[in-house]
Length: 323
View 1 (cartoon, one colour):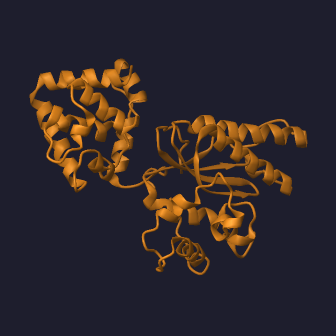
View 2: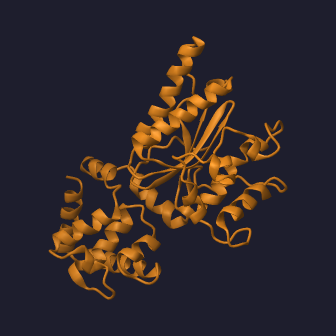
View 3: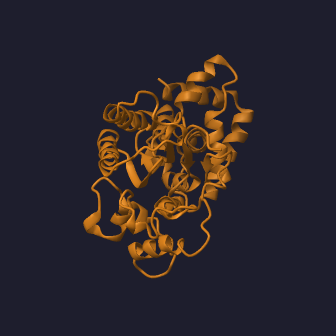
């Protein structure tokens, strides 16, 4: 069972779902679907979210997006509360419209874009009583914009999904390949991409899962609380903080073979306290292969085990990140 999402950081990717309270209908008429659509557009304008796909079902909604800023909770509150208040006035029905807090999954990177967005787009065609036979026939999703540019919404990032193309379904046109990929799910059993999510809410590699768990583990001492809550930051900020501590430029860390300013400590901190992947960090440190980042982090672990001075540097840098 997916847990309520409370993890927020720059560039986080989410799939969220919200159900009607007691499975009650959220939408009775077309203008109610349109009101939710308008609410999402306004949410995107307020938050800067990058929406990849969405679908409004009669008694629940799905949304797949990235947050350039750590504002998941504020954005979802604005979207759901706005619709719930409007709905209550329209139907003269006080009380909770949505069933508790929204639930969903935290997703590692764009390698999941196609599978997750296809799952959303095919929702209206699944189940014992499908709403339509083909996803293009359901007007309350983002799929029509993937079929025709004329039907695109300005605030849906179709091109970012296309760019995640990895050769599925052949051809040289990502847009055409994506359509074939989605429609292939109509004629074959379609696995739920979230069935493999760790603990029901983490979808990604074991490395990603381990890092997120470290970030959210309960602090052992009271003075660790602030660090545990706040060190969900951009890897560039971490690297810059280490470089500043040692009086070097962050650019020096990106030079191939660089030994500037305890570079391995920057790699260690960026890997441990941010959600940047090894691939991301390899680029930051001028490395040709993600495995080389692991070499740097292991070097840092060995050095930290032996050097109290380095441990003191680590504490100072993390405190500076939290001020």
